[in-house]
Length: 469
Image 1 (cartoon, one colour):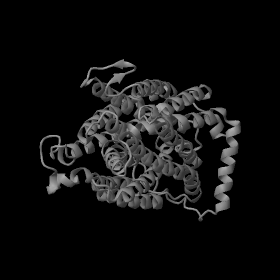
Image 2 (cartoon, helix red, strand yellow; image 1 turned 90 degrees about the vertical axis):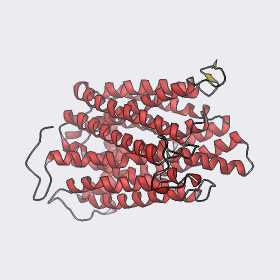
Image 3 (cartoon, helix red, strand yellow; image 1 turned 180 degrees about the horizontal axis):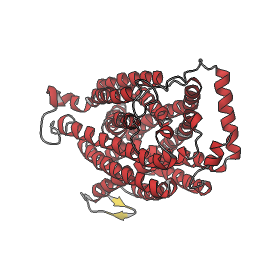
Image 4 (cartoon, helix red, strand yellow; image 1 turned 30 degrees about the horizontal axis):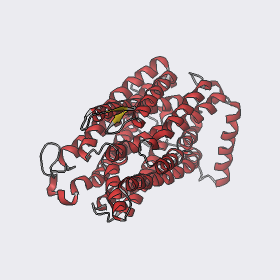
């Protein structure tokens, strides 16, 4: 996008700076997902929780299933909270013209909660505290991210936002790559007590009490606080548009009108419903990838970290390419292609364990499952990154810019309204079948639902409808 020297007012950054400031939210927030949700903290939590359940008298398989169920239950609560607060927060931001106080508040909560993850000890001490702290911090981080998405329509034309969204996603994933490298090279310990490159954990951290791995919490906190600085420097609430504090009736009334509009906008309605299912399924793949690697394949934290680096690099590269493809052909073909790839990966994950792949028995000690899961990680990271980037772009094609925060609040609502569904179904299927693999069956069902509903989504959205008075 061409640089514009003009500013919105005294002290307001130029357009190129605003784009970079907006992109830094992706960079700052990414380790919460990469290090916390997927590759470092969640498998550590799963291993600690499984050992704790095992010590309480459960069998090994049942202990692993209960550990996965505990994590998914907390994710369900977080998803429901985000779902039902996002539209209200967006409507309030649109009506008041103020977003920055919310960004400050969410950033403080996310930082403090991430730091608290340090207190999860290998013997299970601090298990409840860590579970609550992670999901409260993650909820705050996601709420800030959702509100930041509402700024996207103001950063370029509908044809430009696909490239901007893809570049931001790629930038964020590179942040994930860098943070994973730092954790694996200098902090997270292997069973030998050394890092991936044979060093003792930095700063004299004790490998016996897993201080190197536990440092992931303070690491996320420092990263988030440091890299939110460019965001706050280059983003402002628009000058001169601050309005009186809106009342609850005004917010709920506007939100009710927006929901009624869906009846006359079939493309918008179908897209929100479709993305509700496929984003829920994608979130499940992200949340349980590291746990699956730990509980089914028996990987150590460092192996999972390498898996994460591969996935994050693929996500960065393919998100960038996806943004270019979006700019040329529009977001819908990108979304459809990504769903097909993720469906294929889901089938492989369900049909794979240490001793077989899709009903084909493997010799004892075969490394083929590890190789295949590394490839699956690359596809999940790449297709997942491009899928979310293209979804943001498609949302802009259905958005009235004057009510962007409210619209992206609905986008967040539909992305989280059924956020309880995938974790709840995974919990049910895991406990019912006593199998971590079969517990992933709902992921396939939800991707298929999203794919079918895309049939009624117009490739260019419904710009005429969203710009009509």
